[in-house]
Length: 318
Image: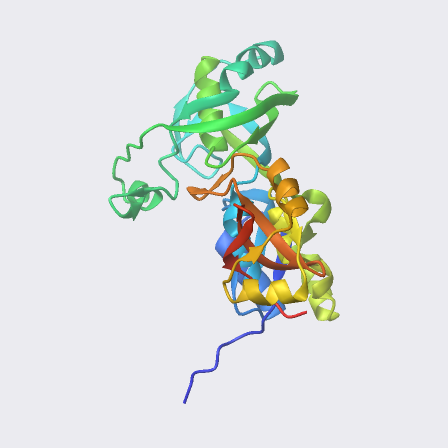
């Protein structure tokens, strides 16, 4: 007898305002239970000591997670000067200290060094794998973790406030893979002191912002009232970076079978005009477009040579 799969076919995005002291995995599990969804995933880990935007994909939306993860991130964070911890955040043990407290002018003077493509060494306490094991597991076991520098992109970095001599509040706009904790460490070094992240909040991930987010307690109350679906955004919400192609029901049927469709000259020209270099999870998506039928996602595919060839199909019912 076939084993019955648990949960329901729920498809879409929940933009959770993740609370402190909760892992991203715990947050995904909580949302999945509230919706009784069969499948769920998230677009970018947030540490337990961080709050803010955690996009959670349910059902067919999980197929768009790589697009969401490539989106620009915005973080608002507080650096505490004078102390560096082993984890580079408030959870760790103090491993170095300094009596230097940089002022506003000194901080603003070094920010430009960290804008653009920079080399950054990730924290030892990170999820990066070293010989098949997570770096944070090795670090917790007392092993010395040496990680290679990697190139990351920081589009903007600005000082928002200096509430005390010990604290500075900053905002960073960056690409995938940048670590706020590493930035705090490197900023402190550039200023001749030590530092760690005392507070961290993510305020944007790609197309997802605080305005669309829902707190977990609010989501629980909505679920209790049978209104959780009001917090669910369409599957295609994460695909704002690629052009859209409206197709007929007959064309949608062919695409869902994995077959290409012929583009009208006008459609081909319009998609070509919107083309730009784009790589998602090491895949060249420069020719990618989203086919929709009656505002519902049908398939992601490549539009070239007068045809649209699907390579990711969505199993959604009208």
